[in-house]
Amino acid sequence: MHQLIRRKIFFFITAVGIVLFGTISQAVAQPVKSLDQLRETSKDDRLAFRFGFYGDFGRNYHQSQAHVYCCDEGCGIFGNGTGRSYNFGLLVEKPLVKMLDLALTVGYAERGGAFGFAIDSSMRVLSTGGYTKLIRQHDYTAQLPEVITSLGVRFTPIKKLPFYLTTGFVYSIPLASSSNFKQTDAITSPSGVVFPSTNTNFKVDSEGTISNIKSSLGLRGAIGYPFPLGKDLTASPEINYYFPLTQTRADYLWKIATLEGGVAIRYNIY
Image (cartoon, rainbow, N blue to C red; front, side, top):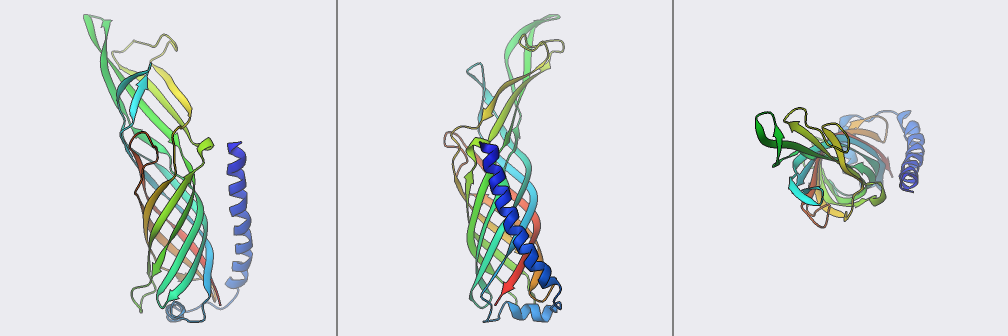
């Protein structure tokens, strides 16, 4: 079921992207605007809105105080971690006043990654020379796909330079049935000690769907610079940062910040 939902979202965004690509292809054939003309575009009262699509890649930063669970007993706390991120979707911008636009995006993002590992040395085992501490390393990885929407403003602060700043709120809705985790346990010391269940020094403690996951709210800031591709078409390299205001789970601290870079393609409509 969750795979079907993910495919539907992907096909919808792809279908809209194909329509935009057709429109953009026609725009590319038009004469390219100079930077002077591009500066004037942001001040043109005739501009009705911009629409387009974007794609970003970067890094997720997980802030965590999740407890390690093994055999129904606490075995430590996972630390902060990181993971690869990607994010793509559609955008619409509506001029409000000169140099200031209302900005709306809708897209799909991956916010997963790995927590910092936790070390457990609470148990002792019989080894050569007597009893010694059993050192175990616990790891936690997650896949966390989300539908994300943002609403904010785009501001062009300097008339002679068309670079812009975007800021606003982001609301993230997790695809709960597609949000999966895996927690593993590995004996790192002493050597030669194994788990009876696997007859190796490694085992999977638990895996499955992440429970108690919830929608989250955050702030986004971005900076970009548009380069003209056609008469009314631009490509803008962007760097953006997402700061979480709320937690990803309801039962313990888990917040995900993101730093990404990518490109936004915009088409002006008059």
